[in-house]
Image (cartoon, rainbow, N blue to C red):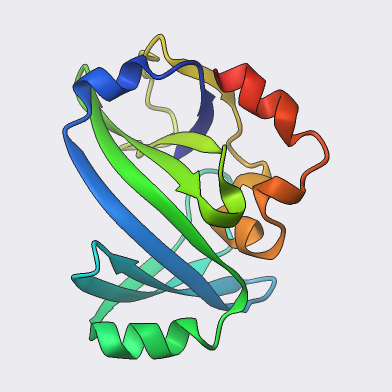
Length: 161
């Protein structure tokens, strides 16, 4: 997985799918995180993710009832992460672009799932600075220290505009 900030919003012209997401973290430690996510107010999952090793990480996900997901969100650590995820095809790959709201309003991140760590990709013209591996951009970190609290967030918003 590679993550990048964006330049402009030309990507919106080719966005193929849109998903509203609310997610919260139930546990963080040095080895794994536990997340609950509700998508489009119609489905929910519970996910356990290992801490990343370079570009790879272990991830297991289970479908759970929405009412249980709502109850788990109330038990969260930190803030609820709210975003709209857009799927944007470019060449032979599909980018996921997260437009954050709530405590992380103003942050927009593009991610691409690679078939293998050495895969070469053609970057779309709307891709900006790569932020892969920068922990402050991980959703779990955004739940603990939201984008609006960053002292330099105004500069990042200008960069992507």
